[in-house]
Image 1 (cartoon, helix red, strand yellow):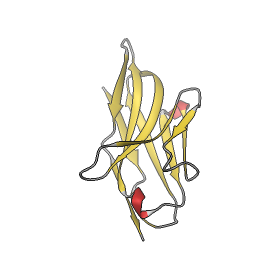
Image 2 (cartoon, helix red, strand yellow; image 1 turned 30 degrees about the vertical axis):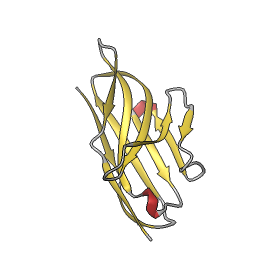
Image 3 (cartoon, rainbow, N blue to C red; image 1 turned 90 degrees about the vertical axis):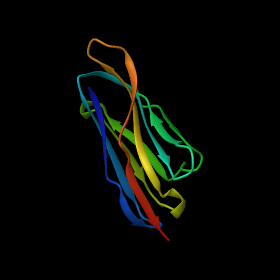
Length: 120
């Protein structure tokens, strides 16, 4: 089984920084794309950022210039550095990854989510 465990969420004042981490564990052979999504109550989950195994990145327009995604392939971990946070960034943040288990094919996995709250 593969698990994605997020950490680093919390309460922060507007303008402040926060860094999220997501560590993948289990019988992992390789990980392709890793990314972050967020969701607020009553709305669909939305894409925030992603990074491939080779280091290419993609961002939602709403976070470009403020958020940075990066990964440590040796630790099977992806990070989301969030700067200049705004109250509209308040949401549950979910980690997502395409993982290939040993003797298996790629499957998509989600973490359990971590709450980020930004006060004005």
